[in-house]
Length: 220
Length: 220
Image 1: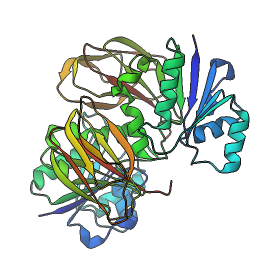
Image 2 (image 1 turned 60 degrees about the horizontal axis):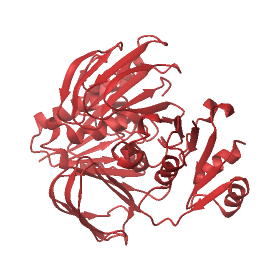
Image 3 (image 1 turned 120 degrees about the horizontal axis):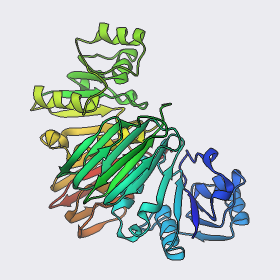
Image 4 (image 1 turned 90 degrees about the horizontal axis):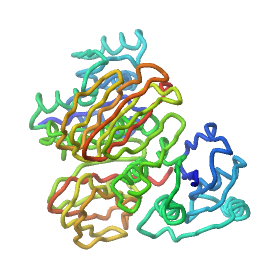
């Protein structure tokens, strides 16, 4: 079982949350590979067209990476999609995939949307519930139908629950705003719900659909 | 026919693009109302719980706004949703609605998602194609089925085309990457397409679904 860290090129990698021993395999995506090198963190594989780094910076990445896949910028998939396909193929039994710098809070908003759209990509369906997106002030994870216990491990204040599809029998318990079992015919964003206490657990359940849950800090 | 500007509370209002005579009606949402006052722009109506401004700042807004709706923070809709419902009710024949500071590039990512989810909200269906989201480095607009001519009026480089639903017979012509008529069973993000020339026109057509188009500048 592997615990994989992927560092994407966004400007908020939040490495302050990274404990080196937490991960077995380190992937850098384009400028994210440079971020790993500059933070003196391991770099097993680097992916990208590397048009976002200088030639000196590229050399740094090339010298550090155990393996490097360089792509032409003109391709259908984003570098992050290619990296995630690599994980699916190499580590189908992966335990967890933490993606840093992929919500690109200060970067290109269309990249954020594209990354969020992974929830609809059948190529990632087998690992989608094991992915966690981590930024300085946000975390995001994906839930498929079932009953889920959501714990606030890192003292987030807000909890935004977003359906990406129609959803059946969505129920929220243990949060500031509860929801009795409800069907939604269209995707719906229920934002700015709150954890009741720092360590409290929110129970999210639904019978059909795809949901993301966004953890949001209070400091912005 | 009214041309409405809504300034939301995000940190990138991009007022540099605002010509005062371009708009007939000015709405400020929460901290966005303060942004209008501080930029010496008109403020017809202010909406919000105003928990993001100090009491002195709230007084500034209150003194300037011709009308003010203050809400409790604990409500189902966001302040921006309430403002948009006001527009739908007051100006059903509205010509255009430009929303500044609503993509909140540096702010809360869940707010960005929530605002993008307006495309699924039946209450806004009658005006959704007349809304344009404007930030410093991005613009976003919504397209319903039909043939659409997309012009690059402000020298954007990238053009990202995102379906929020399954889509039938999606065709892209006149861009760097063209797409012959294609069906997609799931929402799909086609990002980082490009305008061929500054003034070139991209033709987007599809028969079923909801699409957003993101214009992205090259400087970040």
